[in-house]
Length: 294
Image (cartoon, rainbow, N blue to C red; front, top):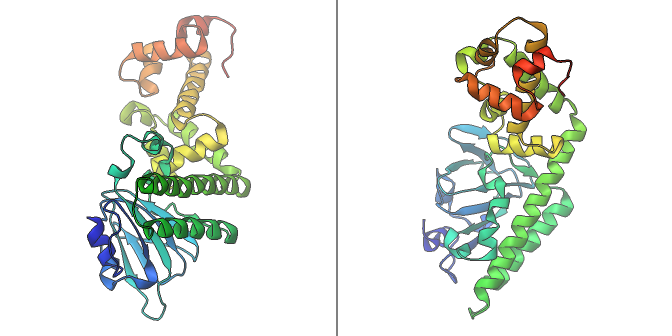
C-alpha cells in the first residue's frame, strides 16, 4: 500500500511519501475491511468500537490498547456502528529507515513480530505519552519539508517505538508479578515432554512448541522468558535437556546412544558434543564419576 492510499482513508493529503499518521475518528469505513497496509504500523485503539480479527481469530481489546503490524499482516474490524471510532495509527515504509541509526537498531523492536493478540493495555499515563508522540509526528508532517524533516520524523518514530518497547517491558513485569507460575509451568511442560518418550518420535521441544502451549507467539514468548530468566528460551530448553540427560545417565543403564535418541537427538554425536560442552565431561565420564549437573 502506498502512503497516498493510506492517507486517502482519512481524507488527508500526503505531505511525505514514506510516512502517514491517521486519526481513526476520521477513517473511511473501508479501512476496517481485511487490510494489509504493507507497512510497519503502530495502532492505538482508544475505544472499543467493534470486533477486531486477525486470520479469523477475534482479538479482545479494551480502550487504550496498542498493537503493532508489520508488512504482510492482515487485520479487519467489524464496526459497532453505535460507537464512534477513536484512536490513532502510524504507518511508515521501511525505506524511511534505510542506512540510518534507527534502521540499524530496528531489530530491538521485536514487538513488530508479536502476534496482534499480544497487544499492550496502556495505563492512563502511558496512553498520554503515546498520544503526545503521535501529536509530535503530526506536527512535523504538517511543517513544510526541509533538509531536517526526515531526521526529525525518524526521531519521532524512534521515540514512539522506544516507549512501546518500554511499555512491553512493564507488561512483562506485570505478568511475572501476577503469575509467578509462568516459569513453573514452563518447567512442568518441558520436563513432562522430555520424560514422555515423545522426543524419540517427534524431536526435542522447540521454542515454537512451548509458545503454543502458552497460546503465545514464539517472539513474545521468547521475550517473556528472557525477561524472567535472563536467558533465551532456547537456552532454557537446552538446560532442561542436559538435566534430563544427567538423570538418565545416573539412574538408568541406557547407553549413551539410547539416551541421545530418548532426548530427541537425531545423531548421538550431537548429543555428546552438547553434553561435553555444557557439563565439562563426556557422558560416559559423567556416568562413571561423582559429578552433579545443575
